Image (tube, rainbow, N blue to C red; front, top):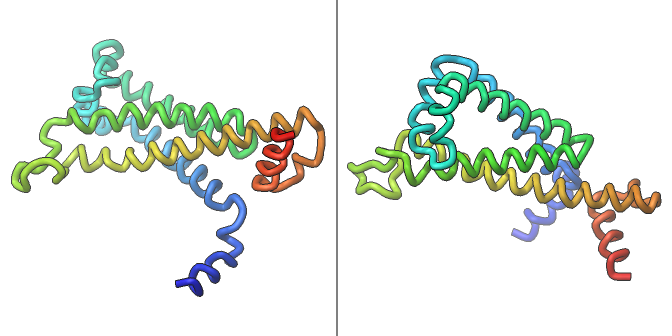
Length: 188
């Protein structure tokens, strides 16, 4: 096992910010596709049970109607995706995108306990999930990913601000070195 770990540790692809960039890029892609499908009638019909059972979004169809509610979700998802994309260059915009993403997945995860017929009665009910609940379970992971991006962008935005204030070599150090330098500076 130690041999495998030492070999994996030497893979250049696993060093640096590759994981962070892959996570960000996959969230941008996800928001593009999810936002896109909100513009079609089939998706509006599919979202009715989610609106009906969502404790944080139940009010939307009553206020906007189902079609406008799905359009609003689509625009919101594209805006969040655009902010996450901008986060490659501006960590402050990345923070806004990650905050929006956290809010999005908090809204969808809270639907899970309230979704009717979400647990397979033939298998004894909870925890045997079916249908819409099974679909929503991915949002638990996406919420965790959103929290990860938020944390990373907050750290990086703080380091960028610190570097700009001091105008020193912090801007040219790697992220790990920046965090170490910032911690050293804080302790002085």
